[in-house]
Length: 356
Image 1 (cartoon, rainbow, N blue to C red):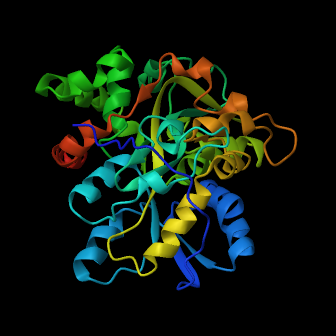
Image 2: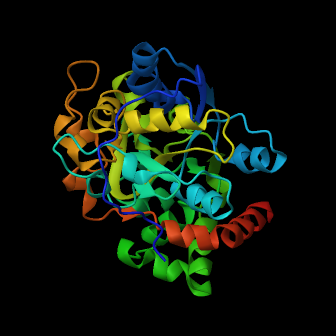
């Protein structure tokens, strides 16, 4: 059953909850966290006087359930992936949001129609569309051109970086093994498909450097610990443009996903948190974030407002995962699939990782 919420939205008046003088927002840190601080936190604090405490975490969803069950919630807003959102919402660990109160798009489009499909849920509001894809050093000779090259240790010898987890690794393995993106999740829903994905991962297992935090892949490339790595596109963009690193991105078979704001059940400053989310996810604010990092805004009306990077030179369009040139063979993460299969596939992955 689809959990997306599509409701008619009315323009909500902008008002900060006077009862709260500060809110705590937990996000992912690094270049992504910095883009939120610049695009959302600083302007909001200046506009309202509300103090924002920015906290970094490898996965902001991890502490939510424990805090809710303990009755000691310190997080007002968390930035999470959709699969974690769906799971936590189903478990009652998140506040159900009044999505109809989100502001219309700048062009008058109701919010429920303005957000890209997958960007609105009962318990969450989307901010960005990002991709997990292959990054490599551009100063190392012949460049990879296909996902299969990531698994070709003979043609491209050297270590690979791969996110430590079933999600993304299994999809990547099947696409590298020739499975079209449109068939990946149907195949992964079968025992044969799961076996095939792990068999493909077996071919590079002893050459993998596993990463867990988004800041690690660009560092692995910079230190030449790996010749290729999966990575979040915005992290590599930041290293390329802001740090002049000799990196490139392999756009074929990028895996698209969202990040969304949620409010944990029992958040101490729930009303103030919701006022922030309504403001931060309007048309202009989502476009503003795209000037600090190469993630696509979750609202359609934001796209025309995306221009230059904050260096005043770099056009952001060619670096966006939502660029039409990159979408033909992209895979969009199936949130329902991972909500249903995450536990079993993660257990299989952990057992596989521990085996000799």
